[in-house]
Length: 234
Image (tube, rainbow, N blue to C red; front, top):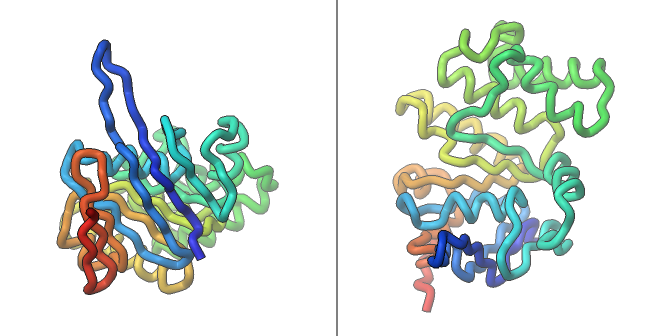
């Protein structure tokens, strides 16, 4: 069963008299429980694709389905509610709020879903322990290492029990050892049933961890790799 599906999706930007085709007619299917990588060099369209997959942006043309529902033309307020319930985001730059503690950063997404303060505190404490940061709850982001900040970001992404985790270069600002630890944590979440979609420019990391890889080039899907089998797009 596909939890996310993009059908002939394009995203164009007008730059003066020039039309930039950031994504130009892609088809992406993400099955429930899969570990998917969207792979490609800088400028290939992978980050724009991630924004479309995560309903952070709307397509110029084409259709996007989330759990079988067409979300291509919803109002931003409705999209925000769907995102908050269905999708957790992990960003390369962590995107933690500097004047909130680690625990408060994790609590924040639950606020927008109407959870009580007590519910938010209990869940945030559980998640901080899950990512082995139970002793860092009251630290601010600038008091944490890069790896610790990324683990806080993972805990925040899990706050509303999302079905899908969207990770944009989740190890890009981390050393090799810490990056591998983060990847192993994502794999563990995937084993427990969470769908993982990772955007990366690192083919070794994509091939080591993902079961399905969409290789992008010039805004299009160049090929798709599923486990050991590769299909070249005509």
